[in-house]
Image (tube, rainbow, N blue to C red; front, side):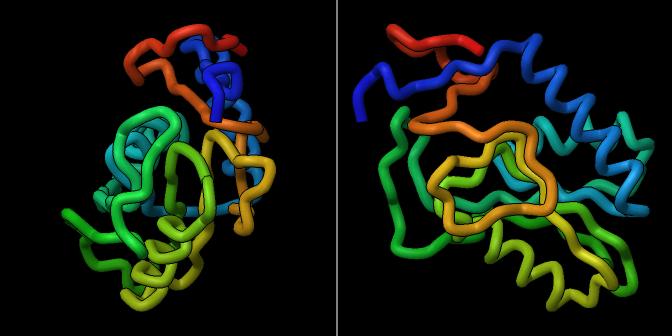
Length: 161
């Protein structure tokens, strides 16, 4: 992947995307728990929890790729590094991550949440890679290449959207 394939998301655009996602989720899904997939998915998850007035918030840190841009795969399948999931039995849960590349991480977390007895489970991401094999119920934008969030270290020669 070349540097020109990196799409840098500005704080302004990120804010617009999160507000639009919050409106769509609020209109379509009566949830009572949000789970942020860490590390970077915890940021949009926390903001969505605030906007949607959801007080029950958990995180699960999963590792599959390193933090480089473009990322390099570290493991054959996603590895749970930390989880503080509370009781999910009978709850309506939204799992939030920063983006979907292959969908392996998100699918693994969704399975864990379903196995914990959640009544209804949906997923949301800020960015959906155009060639991803898994599509969450909610996503803010579709991208090609590598998505660089405002909280990432500034890339060289990227285009900001």
